[in-house]
Amino acid sequence: MEIHPNQLELIPPDINRLGKWIKTSYSFTFRSPRTPREFGVLSNRIMFLGMLELQKNRRLDGLRIKLDDLKEYDNRLTIKRLKRACEGLQEYKMTFIKGNEAFKLEVVVPHIEYPEGGDYIEIDFNPRLSPVLTKYISRYSHLSLDILMRVKSYTLQRFIEVISYYKDTGYLICSVKQLQEWLDVKLPYSLIRERIIERAQTELAGTPIAFDFHVIKEKQMRGSGRSRAVSVKFTIRGAGQVNLTSIRDRLKKLGLAQYQIENIVHQVDGKTINRVLYNLSLKRAEIKDITAYSWSVFSVMLD
Image (cartoon, rainbow, N blue to C red; front, side):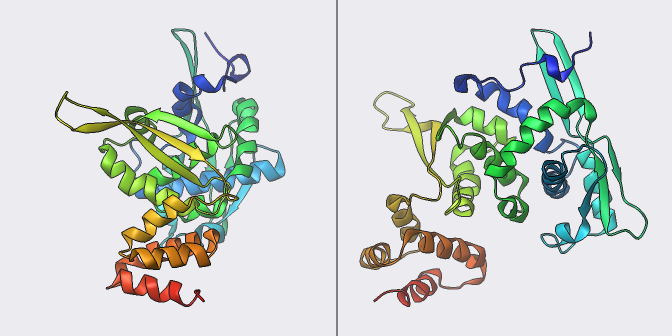
């Protein structure tokens, strides 16, 4: 039985049913199990630029991606690495399911070409996917290309895309298990929070998809006092709002004293604080005394 994408309910309008569709809906930006992670990041970057070209040109074939646009975010780009990333990109498929048994698999990018000595690659999207790709390109206006291209983790790329998917609803509640499945990781929640969620929060601060999160816990054993994370609620608040509680917590992690934190919060606007915190996170490995350095940066902004 052949199923055409036009016949399928691709994205259910009911927000409560979106969860089970998210992995299928975002399968073309998920790394193929056979693609090494570093190439998965590069494959995604090619996809992001390809989707933007699709949005701009409104056609599926002959879309050119300049190598300089990729080199801007990857100074190690070689033709060999480019070829490996393109091979990984051709592993990306969309899966369509109808009923209990009927399914259809489609390769998203069936053709990629690099001309000898060229300064671009040319890609063709699958014409059979035209209806669903038309839906997808509209969401790229919600994403910051610079953020997606800059991050060096395919897991962060996935997380940012999932958060952006719920921008219009303003919130997302998911179980830790769902989060592990969507991000394709087997990490405990504590490491997901540290390595992915908090890093993404820093990356997205001051953008239209800035977010806060709250973990929902349950006690493991009666009387034990122990609890475990079972779900996470993400609130997508956008760039126009600043969460002072979140800012205070992040400043505290830098080792700043309470009086220093309060001076910063009351005298420096939230967007500037978030920008400084982001820059500090990029340099942290190079800084011997992060507390002293952070205070020296903020103190020049105070009266």
